[in-house]
Image 1 (cartoon, helix red, strand yellow):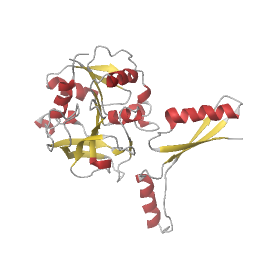
Image 2 (cartoon, helix red, strand yellow):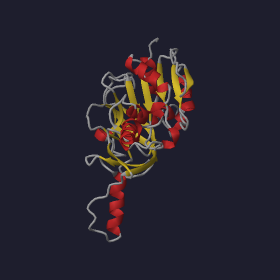
Image 3 (spheres, helix red, strand yellow):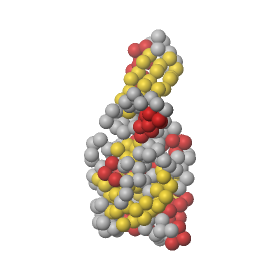
Length: 80
Length: 214
């Protein structure tokens, strides 16, 4: 099954890359850009047909490796 | 007394660390990251570099190396564990030090000497120094911007300026016990006048002085 994981840096943690991209957008005239956050999307393919099991497995992957609990929150979406 | 310097794929400062320790009269040996028995060692250094090419996050994959369970054991027993640059990032990922590292505030890879000031001598990195002592050491990192939402990290060295946005201007921190420390600049590159500074020696002497027979 295909799985999409989004990993978002917590709002209270600085995002220097997002800040730089926002400045560049302002210089290009997109001055209505209030904020930019450079979050991460990971696509996985898991050898299983059980969406409930797959979701639990991938959440465990996030806790152990894919996300850093100090900085980030994650969301696991099992694709239909 | 013998220190181990753990070699992860992609680190590049391991020989400099061994050389610096030996130049101070200490003993050090390289240890492969897949080794699972560090029983003959009295302390370890996790050297700088780019373990696993910084894939995913700096230090995120190295923390699962087999040798890291021995590093955790040594840390738990109170032995000195020092992470330099990428090594500090690994110790944070492993949960042996609080916080995490993000990109430098200005998104620049910083490669220059920085001035730091000793904030406490109650760590294995600073015990031979004096509070307020200024140390000039080379910084060489992109993700040196330490954040610690828990506020539990003990700052051992502070940048005099603020080169990278690191919380509380931390250039080095320790755990509460003081036996696990991480530093972003490279003390092993400031050990000889030929290198432009000898200020790293007092930090490495502190580490060596903290080694006690296992």
